[in-house]
Figure (cartoon, rainbow, N blue to C red):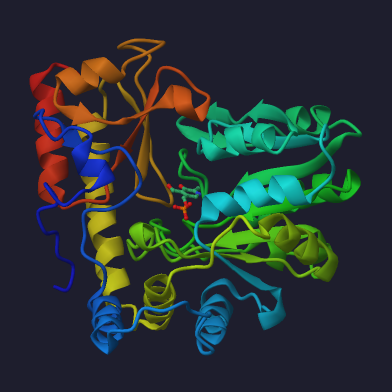
Length: 375
Ligand SMILES: Cc1ncc(COP(=O)(O)O)c(C=O)c1O
């Protein structure tokens, strides 16, 4: 086993500090409790051993590491000129909102969704338009008619989360084609956040990059990737935008100028080692996440809590409206679980549980829910 989970208490961890003085399991922010893959740690040790930590450049071999990975895993051929390295994917969402259209234009997205999707348009002086995803029998999908009806002549950008945080959908080819058709009809640019695309839990799934759907439409896309979720490196701050159109890429980079710092030298090293790793750690991770997901499915079956079974991500979306339709979070904290609040994602009464942790932590979480009479 190369998957290890050291004690994270007192390590200045955002996730673990939140409840440091209370007996509450932190299952909220999206980082995992696993150490990074041995190959990534070895590359970092080697870089540190050199001793000089001056200003860096993206290593010359890094673009090929990502491009080869994307060709093998997403079937998408990427040109090195299209890459823009970023110190975080959230910057990419904010930059996309600034780089497309003009102040006063509208940005469309579907809720519930990762909170920065809801904040970025307003921060860029754009109007946020949201359309609810539709839930049927625990599976979430697009209400395409509502999506299209929400588009006005001012709508310039669609922010897509693929796979989707928090509902865990890996959008199918049919769903993506329908979104593509709408984007073409209304001349929208699509910014696709694909940070969770290597965390596909259902057997046989393969990631379809949105920008890889249609070579002509690729010029209307900004795709955002990062090794940080899959290989658990979010504290190192390394992400990238793939922007095939030179004009859109220039505009995106102009918005970065003077404000967005370069990626730190360790982030680049870790990213390259992650994209070049042999896949063994990744396979162990997926097996663990599938096991944790199965524990949750079994425990929630027939309970008063609704569990959306994620096809992808290590995030479970819980319908807790039977506990409190507006704010169930404190009830779960009282039971000893610290979850993410659905209100931040645009949907009160729901909670998000991060199961990127050892199975023993999920077993404890389930016991706590049972002891509190919530399951
Ligand atoms: C969909 C999505 N995008 C972006 C991020 C954060 O990316 P970064 O830490 O690189 O800004 C997250 C983290 O949870 C996420 O779930």
